[in-house]
Amino acid sequence: MSKTALILGVSGQDGAYLARLLLEKGYRVVGSSRDAQMSSFANLIKLGIKDQVQTESVSSTDFRSVLQVLKKAEPDEIYNLAGQSSVGLSFSQPMETYESISVGTLNLLEAIRMLEMPVKFYNAGSSECFGNTDGERATEETPFRPRSPYAVAKAAAFWQLANYREAYDIFACSGLLFNHESPLRPERFVTQKIVREACQIKAGKQGKMNLGNISVKRDWGWAPEYVEAMWLMLQQDKAEDFIIATGQTYSLEDMVETVFSSLDLNWKDYVELNPDLLRPTDIKISLADPGKAERELGWKAKYKMKKVAAMMVDECLRSMSE
Image 1 (cartoon, rainbow, N blue to C red):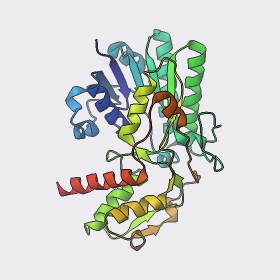
Image 2: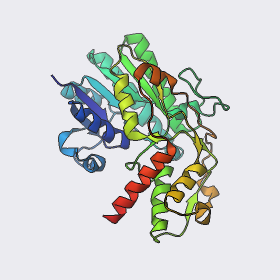
Image 3: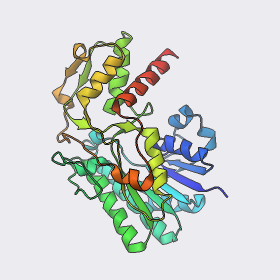
């Protein structure tokens, strides 16, 4: 008998790659969006798996909606990837961000408890919860110091999950994923903006690129690898939380230089810094220790920032030529 997986937020970057991975492993995959009839599920189409995923309409902030889909899908595994996913957008939509992430996660946990489902639950945490770690690498024991409405919501969801795991013996874990990119990223994410606009500049369709703070440092990985770590967490005998990262940190300037260099361009000729793009608060440097994932899950990132940037540029150029 094959397992059934329910992926909330299947239309996003991680949801689409996770759906593909689980289908390859023989799962029956049920994916949700707020309105399955209206959603284009463009990422599932890009990956060529739209017809293999059963889609359902679910609003994770509506408890009745959550109960209905759990009863209908009868999943063995639930992956909660839903919710507002942009740090920048969370400053202008703090209430929507908090509700979609924190309340949505609480509704899922409470539904699992009420239905007494023997299900394994994965929740999408975030490295943003750590905030600035004063130059120290974050581990699973590092205290949270969130610096955005998005990070506050993710931190609240993390502790809700930890409480339900302890209080009700639910198999539930959070993946504290550091930045992970792919061609499926929306352009509001700075990495995709850099790649697409640099390719437009190379093609002569754009003159300049505007960016905010390029001195910030992040740990960038490859999204298709990170969804495998999500799956591995639910294959363990005991539910635990894990940091998922490459362990290597680069500045946004390094990312910009790598992208432009791959196009044989000097980024300094095209990039202009715009103070209007600065966030009210931001994390200066993001450092990760992914050692636990390697030791206990056998997972280690193969692709680091420079390879990730190159793969994204190659895909962007390919799509522009079609």
